[in-house]
Amino acid sequence: MLAPVLHLPARAARPVVDGFAGLGRHSTFYARVLAAVPTVLVRHWRHVLRHVNDISFGSASLLAGGGTIGVVFAMSAVASTQIGLEGYRGLDIIGLSPMTGLMSALVNTREIAPVVASVALAAKVGTGFTAQLGAMRISDEIDALETMAVPSVPFLVSTRMAAAVLAVVPLYLVGLFASYAATSLAVVQLKGQSSGTYDYYFQLLLTPADVGFSLLKAVIFAVIITLVHCGHGFHATGGPEGVGKAAGRALRTSIVTIAIVDVLLTLTIWGTQPTLPGVGA
Image (tube, rainbow, N blue to C red; front, top):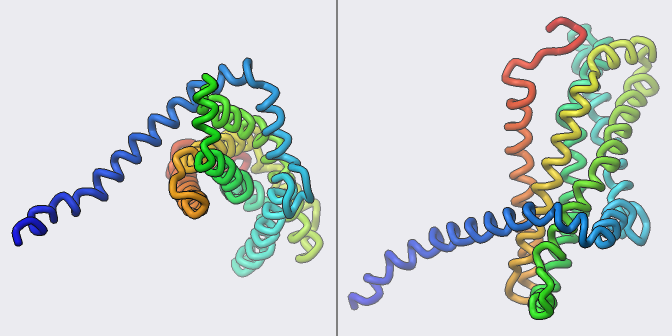
């Protein structure tokens, strides 16, 4: 009668212990991946370039089974069209519709474009990384690499990390261009605002520093996505079902982490009371 009662504390503590063990395993894995990136750029640069091509263009249609560039462009354009339409409507209520260009330069650059590009990267590329590495894990391909004295973490994960960082720069710039073009189209063509007024306020607030910080955000998000998704795929267990669960957990974790890190980066870069260059505020 006493045996089940005595085992209750151990059963209650098991999820906590397993959680800390998993956190330690992933933290060690992340450190190994980042430390090996300079090495793989020299030794495995061909694999890095192949992953860059797969991430950017893929082998099928751009929107369905191919690369990420079409997905980033489409998602950025749709999200920024909403920014233009709703932003104009909200500012027009208080008589400030000419300042829609200010909002476009501020919101698209600092928040919308980095987050949209990172979500597209997580959904398109990150889940693919999880599935690929998870399939290799359950089919013992990773163990086979280790048996042949090929370090699995640098060869499989660090190459993907380097490729994601290299690919995210042009991908993000494409998404940022789509954001600017879509907002301008929505405000000038659909809402009928003067293009000169829109461009004046847009160029007044847009600065190279903001674009640089926005790109930095995108690179940091790409690193987080690659680490999280590759970590879950590399440690996947439980056969094909376990790989599917790992992909779901990785996607949830990366999106929540991106949201938290985005807030922290915004506060770190622009502060709690950000200034608006060009308008003296």
